[in-house]
Image 1 (cartoon, one colour):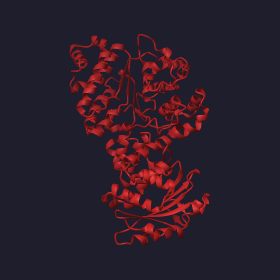
Image 2 (image 1 turned 90 degrees about the horizontal axis):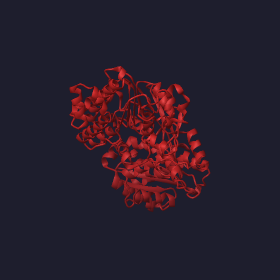
Image 3 (image 1 turned 45 degrees about the vertical axis):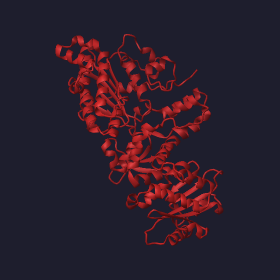
Image 4 (image 1 turned 45 degrees about the horizontal axis):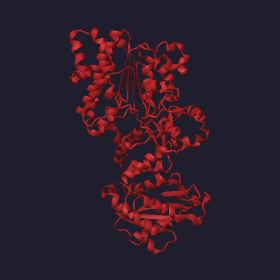
Length: 567
């Protein structure tokens, strides 16, 4: 019986247990024909570890041949590449479990892992002189000092080369996992320096013949100059770059079609596309492999957010929250179904992320939270990409962010959503917005960019309603631009909304300002675009929302003065 082995990211175990395998074996061909050192940044759970263990079992020289694992795979059709199977010593490291709260704890984790690695190659100490042998044994006993650790990878590569008389394959998986943790816990500079000496120094070997190929994976490039500054033989293949590596992580359209055929689930094609498609790597359309395999395994359960979890989203949410009103305004556009256009930086460091919206969106893109396509030159000649939310699953990540910054409270976002769905009296909306303003908006934020901050109130609506309403922010309508237009998509919720926001000073009159905003909606014909979409005029509600400091007033066209009463 066909079965995905969820959680099995060891290639040999997957093949031995007859697990369903989407053939990515031509990655081997690209690595053999590629650069000495290849960095492959990809989002988490897009098949990096499975692919790295596949490379390990292909190249590694073992007592018992692993050639049988590749029978029937595409790489078996290339005898000139199959000659490399089982021919090399392989140094394999995964750093995904090196996440620690302090630099000292991280060093201890490295000390333990390097000890395990040296013990794996304990037989090679027979060729070492006394000084090197003592250092080798010191590392095996987990007694190595910081200088021993700095040079450990470099020396192990050299010792393996000398012992086997064969160049070495180095595979390092999730190299940036401890760096992300270090940034969160405040020791990023220390870990950057260590990684520069340990990884960067190890992969730029004094003996160029000692290293055949090195493959490194992670989520971010983390800037070449910060860790791999000395590597002039490094090739970085990001998701923005077209080429044969584009299809090696994640499932392509063709692969998903085969999966659905093999599991007799062709009727689920549109559901999977809506929930888990939407990524573009190079020129390839890519599906999230973790979520697709989870959906197949749990079928007939309804689709769900399999890829998301709170711990991995923490840094994402921190950057969004710290981004200020401009980021929240951009997020508002994304959640209303609109695109952004920004240049994307492939060489950002963690220190760079919060400096500009472009860097924050770059970080979100490379982490798997945005789709980027259609690059166009901006005014400075940089490639500015069209950015959008890739699928329904990722939209839930942004919903979770909204819930994080606007936590559920009595009279909070849930009640606000209920108001729109059930077409309640406008005075209730006024009270809900007033409560939100008092709870959530600081005067400091209002002073910086008040209208944008107040617009952020509706992010929760946009996030939760985008599959019920077509929501447009600042659309062309009639003779001007309404702030928000909400057009129903399904008959269950037939009411449409036209919303105009106004910020006024303390000197102005709330009621007159509210009347003026309603007159603007009427005179500029904002409801016209909604009516033209087939919505009867009696099902269109025109609302004016006025902000004066932290005081809120809501008015509605055709409603009496009671709706404009000051709180």
